[in-house]
Amino acid sequence: MICLGIESTAHTFGVGIVTDKKKVLANVRDSYTTKTGGIIPSKAADHHVEVFDKVVRQALEDAKVGWDDIDFIAFSQGPGLGHTLRFGGIVSRTLALLKKKPLVGVNHCIAHLEIGRMLTKAKDPVLLYASGANTQIIAYDGGKYRIFGETLDGGIGNFLDTFARELGLGFPGGPKVMALAKKGKNYIELPYVIKGMDTSFGGILTNVKQKLKSGKYKKEDLAFSLQETVFAMLVEASERAMAHCEKDELLLGGGVACNTRLQEMCAIMCKERNAKSYVLANEFNVDNAAMIAWLGIEMYKAGIRTLLEKAIIRPYERTDDVLVKWRNN
Ligand code: AMP
Ligand code: MG
Image (tube, rainbow, N blue to C red):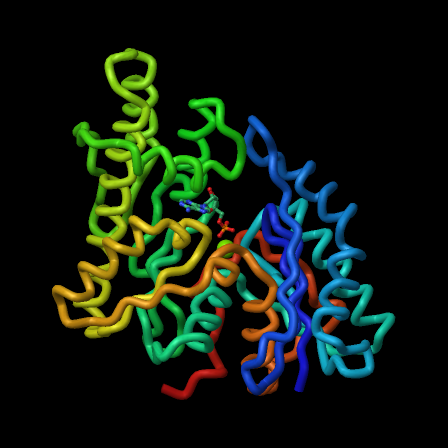
């Protein structure tokens, strides 16, 4: 069985082709980037309009398959930016109609967790999903993927991107902040904001902006301190979720999971509690369509289909809105 998956929740338009034997035949993506400003939803959608045909063709070429080999199409139904999701939805429905393929709409956040279970030995991990717009700690419990902690304002990636923007660096800013942080040596105290299991970044951002403007601190030290602070918040909440759920596996997902310092901090925490920490290759951390195709396969095998007339986008879909029919443990 072969599934073609389509990703379009935000900056990335991706097409992935995956088999039910867990083979990733193609994972092509083209992402909207800027030199200085942040992500503008309508511009990101314009980008997807420009590149989608090239990305679809490249994926089929990489996978060395034709449309006759594709059994069905899976697409990111939500959550995400309305502008970009809508375009991905149009492409998916049009292809399903033209090529006469069944369609499966999938939840993007859950796809991050399922590709981790597929690519690693993790069986039932807690997912620390740290991406641009999303920051959630997710684990399977009672037939659903529940959110055990999440950001109360923006996503951690957007927070890093905004800090980078203050420094005049472009989007995505996360990798640039990481490079800068490696040069920082002095820890500058910042607010540490964790409420119950939830985190918040807005106040920290204001504080860092003020420190930046004061001219008293080196930007390298601020980048370093910022990472140490916000990553510690995420690791703390993840550890408590693991303790509460009695799970001994942690999986990192989302674009910020590419950060080597965050990876290191998760590994240390897991080692201290005799748990395992799993990190994926960067191409599966960032938004990608291989994960959409793989979750599509799991759902399709469980008998789930999305009728064309019901294949509307769900920009605000929550992880725990989805009934998980494809897991039996
Ligand atoms: P996603 O939305 O999951 O594709 O992730 C995109 C986000 O990941 C953006 O906010 C990036 O700045 C961030 N990101 C990518 N690489 C890194 C990195 N090495 N360190 C921190 N953030 C990163
Ligand atoms: Mg994502």
